[in-house]
Length: 355
Image 1 (cartoon, rainbow, N blue to C red):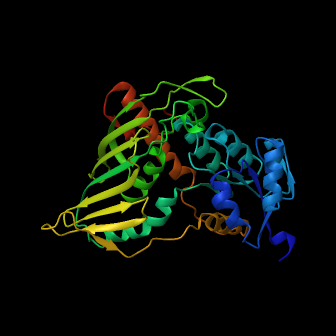
Image 2: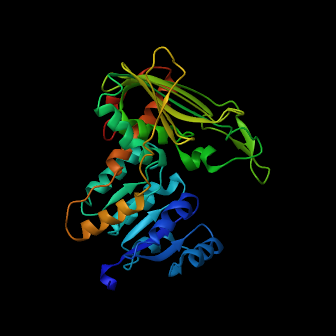
Image 3: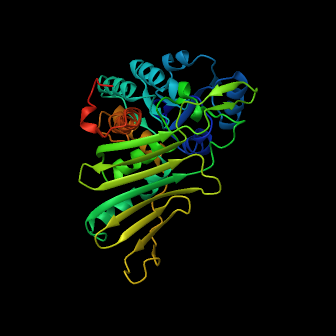
């Protein structure tokens, strides 16, 4: 393989999922060469560069996207920088892989959609949630084969004690860093969009139970991101939907999606990584374990294959691209507006350029 066959990759922000999933997979691809790492501190950049064998470090992300040696940029920063960095990378002719939580709000999402449309030969992808990747095919097969019958309702439950500590504040609780992103709501939004379809309308309520916390330095931080969210609504296909998300569920961590059909019910337990089918009316608590273990994580492979196809001038596909990801950002905007205005929101009201 010659140098011209390589996909030269840079990372801006490489913590969390970047070191857990992206980098371990990318280093196994012979066509990928890791060029530059730019973290928040030079010390962190040097540690990552040594561990994953990046060629160099940088203290300036703008220099990274301007580098003529770089073909593709992985953006792993907090959401407040996603729009600016993604747009700059596309403008510089780079393929973009943006970490989950596409951006701060639906206005920024539409700006990213427009930027991607202006560079149709460049791949722009947002990282999908692991449970969408794993269970999308088995769930869609259940639905397409009619094993559930008519899908009548879907319920999502996501609870943890992640927000309980008054002396701990993460970036996920800082509105200036996370925007409208709340708990796991965006992750479930994308998953439900893919499995069952988007909301046509919804009504949401939210609550901040702990309005103030202290960070690691003892500084008081006002909490503006809800710690509890409830959502009810109707999907475009007529299915009823209900969701409950809480970061204050002491001793009750749950992550599951339940699909209620006219013939049977399917429970997808995202923590246990199992699917169950319930169809015996005489034994409502009895379920049959679906032996399909779902699909393996291939997100990095999908992105790199798309970049290779784009460089050959061939058609390519990634999921979610910026257009698809903007749909869950639209839902987050609708949740925010519904809760603030105590009204049911029609998602058709949210078109390009609005909100």
